[in-house]
Length: 428
Ligand code: GLU
Image (tube, rainbow, N blue to C red; front, top):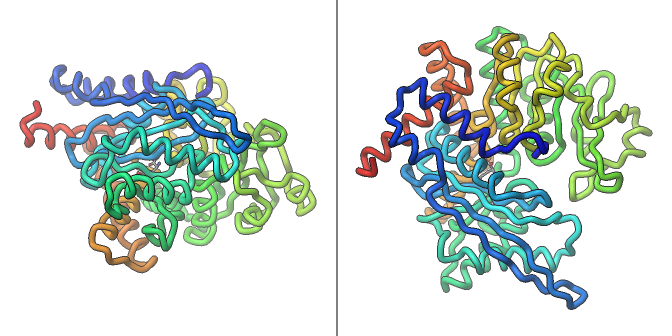
């Protein structure tokens, strides 16, 4: 949240714009403009020092016409109900555009997980499930990790749910650890998925990926694998990544002549994603302010952190060299920045297409949980590549056929699929 953007208003504005382009029946549009169900609840947690703290929890289920609701849980100090509503709405479009049989939801807790001990985090996770267990489940709503949550937390949540229902139920949640019902490839899936779409965009734009440079924001689960994929699958260079420094309470951009080495940076990154500044400087990295990534000379920009990061205030800093914006994060581009992209011919791969690799692999995880039979990493990644490539081309085709911007085309593909499911079920 940037303070100037309300993400839910942004999600509704994007939807309204496309509903108009599609001539969507206003009564059907009214169903889709708002989430179907919302839960807000208080989670009391016994802290290690014996005191009691109460946390605010959320779960928003936007639309389950195409299948059980699906979406992550964020642990973030600035979480709001509107933020969760926006993210739940984008999940509906994400699952539809990826053509996986799931709906859209999102959850959250107002908390900075870095301030909790491991046992406090475990009690908070179990408390979240104690509040929500009747309203989630493999055929109802399936959470997953997101900003501030981890596979270990998913493991605790799955355990709590299984205890409450009296049955081992791995399919209640995805993004679980390996050996605890998780899928191979899930950790890499969002970042690699971003790269599969960038690869297809480069083919479309006739760019030689080996000669390209990407500037990336963030160094969490999305960006680190997107950086590895950009270098190892596409043969390009990554000029920079950035991260939130939890000691200095600000963000920094880390760049290096000749390109950063994500594997090295991972060796000096702590469990909360903060890169060790001193060690990076010693290894020849330039450390600049958190916004510097956006102005780098690059062919591809990849925002991979929070929402509202490319906005009216900074969009003009983007280098003229940038041809592709690959939205690894959810909601990184405000409608004002979208206008700038359109005017300057920047090819945008919209968030709910670009970062759909995570939820697509989550879908594979739940399928494997149901079968109780697990695929190899190669099998998972091959299936993921096929799904992401198909989704990219469905959107590109729509964009060319209707002569619309990629975000609008992605909305058109997604809305069409969700409306069709609602009609087939007799809802509208
Ligand atoms: N939190 C991820 C997203 O925003 C993954 C969701 C999931 O796997 O359900 O797409």
